[in-house]
Amino acid sequence: MDSARRTVHVAAGIVHRDGRVLAAHRADGAYEGGWELPGGKVEEGEAPVEALRRELSEELGCELGSAWLYDTVEHDYPDFHLTMDCFVTRLGAGAEPACRPGVHDELRWLSRDELMDVAWLPADVELARGLVYYWDEALADQLL
Image 1 (spheres, one colour):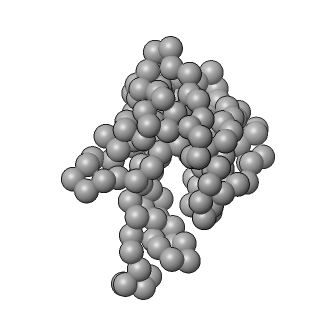
Image 2: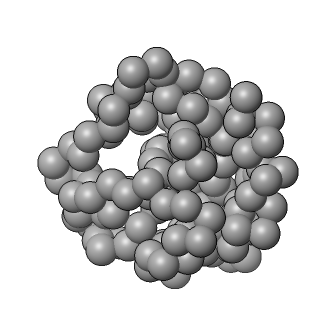
């Protein structure tokens, strides 16, 4: 990796309920049209789980319920390096996520069999593949 390349640190949620994982379709920006896990940038001095809590509130209008760190993905994009802390999460009681205009234009709850049916952003592809394979183990502690 080029030492001059900037690193962007993000927190993403593997938000799940009823045997499905939430995917968000990018509405704008350099990666418009791609699918991603909901989340966003970790601000300086902010813990990744707190960044996820803030981003879910800002982008989906939902409170974070439970969260545990599942994996950290490292990915080189053409102009930056991404470090993505991925948390298995549930939303707060009664939460119903909604798209925030200009951020996402569609949300989908995907089953294990549907997980690879969307065009994931590059950093999310390997994570999604791993989830297909390790679905039961990844979500087991959360399926109570």
